[in-house]
Amino acid sequence: MAELYIVGLVAVVLAMGYLSIYPKIAGNNVNKISLCDIACSMFVFALVASKFWGTGYVFNAILFSTNWFWFTLFIYVLIEIPLAIWYVKKHGVQFDSKL
Picture 1 (cartoon, rainbow, N blue to C red):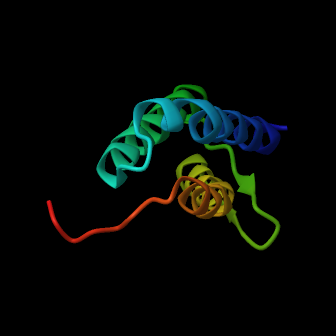
Picture 2 (picture 1 turned 120 degrees about the horizontal axis):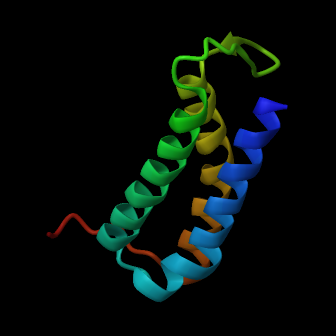
Picture 3 (picture 1 turned 45 degrees about the vertical axis):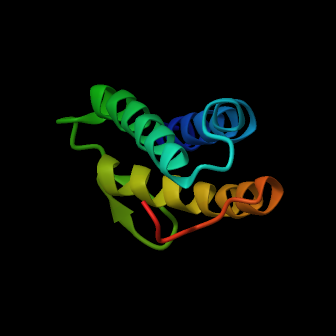
C-alpha cells in the first residue's frame, strides 16, 4: 500500500505540474521549467520523507527492493520522462546553450 501512495502522489504532482503549473509559469523556458521541476520534486520528497523516514519500510519495485528515497526517485523518473517528452514537443521547448 505504501508503494501505491508514492506512485499516486508522484502522478498527481507531475500531472498538475505539466498540465497546469508549468505552462502558466514556465512556458517554453527551459530554465524556468527546471526550477519548477526542482520545486515539485522537493515537495514530493518532503512529503514522502515525512511519512517514511526512519521507518525501515522496504519498498518493492518488482525487480528490486529498496528504501523510500530510491523508490521515490525511481518512480519519479519513470513517470516524468514521458511527460517531459510530451511537454517539450507540445510547447516547442528549445535547449539553447546560451544563458
